[in-house]
Image: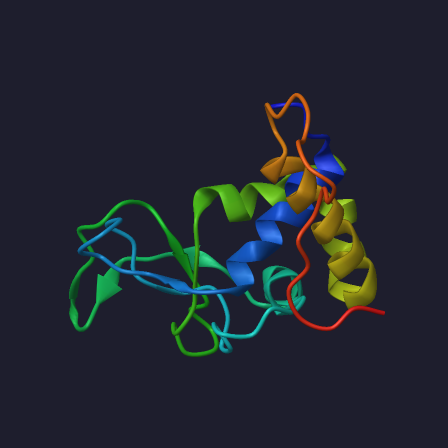
Length: 139
């Protein structure tokens, strides 16, 4: 857990909204969302809205990779890992999945706080005048 609570773990898992898995690198295959270059709460919505089943085939052949899940009822174009599925199987974690699926602004806020905590893990103190560097527009 590294000092993270359930809410922070779920929020950080939302980073799966970005990117995809490649069999030649991880053994897993596919994106988590249909917009893998967009950071949003789609990952949480898909976890709840899709029906997930164990992947058994890939490109017409038997799947020989590690255990992963696919959205078999709507095209088998997405994937989830066992750790993703655990978020909806555990009642304590699922409450945050449901919250973030409904409230993208809350997800963004909680993700930002958990991400900063992750980046600062093990840092005893900061040197210099500024503690954070901000990229992009700020309110």
